[in-house]
Image (cartoon, rainbow, N blue to C red; front, side):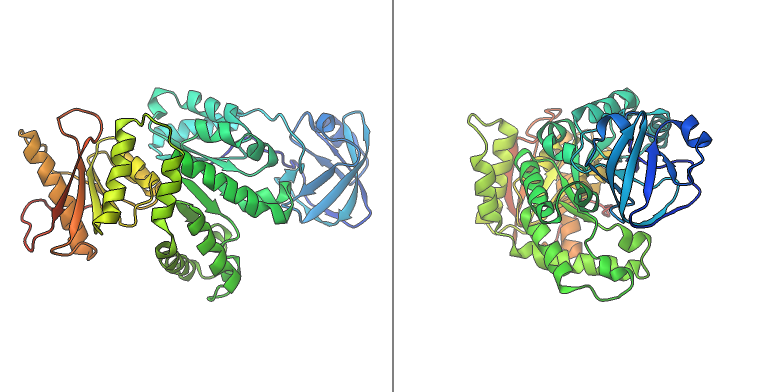
Length: 427
């Protein structure tokens, strides 16, 4: 669920058409806006607007379709000159490039949305316009014990988010690079630098990272993407993103299904081009000794999957944390993660390479027998999908004892022609 935390926007505006060189007023003072005789007064929902904006600062409305520059500040009124005109409606986003703002992390509407998320069993919240860790911490605190299962993905859409990216990554469960809004805050030529930096930081700590907006924009009105878009998606994948997310292309475009198919095709072509072994080496160098057992096992399992040319890594897991670690080290083969936890299975789709399988059979009294059934369940899935074939090696990662809480055992098995264990697969 997309959760739009507090952002600056226009309110109570019917329709105002702005032309180049017009002089307009922006104010959070509702009384002034109502009493003013000026037809070009725009009400802003940010009370400190006149305090943070200085003369000479740029103000953008509707994602840079309208450009303003502040020429004067009179009390609580910000006077601006129109550099590029357009139509302003109620709810239009207002951007202050490079200007730190102090909007509250949560307002009353936000709290109602979060309450709905908890009551509805939402798995992932995409928090927009996250500026620092305070926003993430307040969201998590409000969700409370009832919402502790919800994954928080922080959207980086402003300069403050870039400046505070390290603390935001630490506080969040995942990160989204929203390039369209980032371009409203920083120069266009610097967006790719911000994107690559954020992706690298997330890769190092093993947090999933999503790239979105302006991926296949040309396919809103065409069945064929531009060549630059194909290269853009490929580069994002090779840089280390876990997911790409379409935006206007599927929400407003004429060819949503064709667009999704094209994105899938591009991802499939780009993934084999990644030099995974070099990526694993680079990530491993970032880890300081002594290494935690779970991290060491994950890195070793991925290394063995390279050496043995394994068709897949099959892991049985309750919390998915061990599967997340395997994903961090970017194996070339799929990670089949077998779990009984529905919430964790759905969330695992955020992590690169993980194919979560929901195992619904009743638990066996004999724990080892139950464990082997889950392993074969994963192998059977790979065989039915065609990427695990008889005679090929598969790396198996499991717990050595019941209730250990993490995977600490690894072995290699060679798939036989007939596997009778396991049941139908659910993914």
